[in-house]
Amino acid sequence: FIQAADIKFAQAHADRHGTRLFYCLCPGANQYIEEKLPPLPLLLAEECALLIGTDSYGSNHQLQMATELSLLQKHYPQ
Image 1 (cartoon, helix red, strand yellow):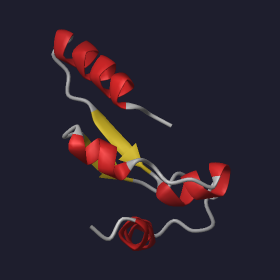
Image 2 (image 1 turned 90 degrees about the vertical axis):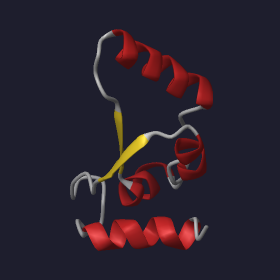
Image 3 (image 1 turned 180 degrees about the horizontal axis):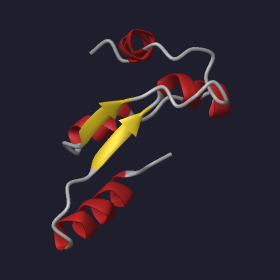
Image 4 (image 1 turned 180 degrees about the vertical axis):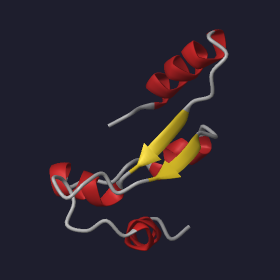
């Protein structure tokens, strides 16, 4: 549910403290919990550094990285 203003705020905070900010996407967990995917086009437009994760069996049906990537590719073919 992140928005551009949130990304800018977080990046400004990271810049002030000399740290690098990464966003970990767990699309299977997002679908499992909220039935939504992360806003990949927004994160890419804002030039965010991205990581892929699976979360855990508590919030995902599987823990395969390739499945997580396939899920993003299926919903965001561009």
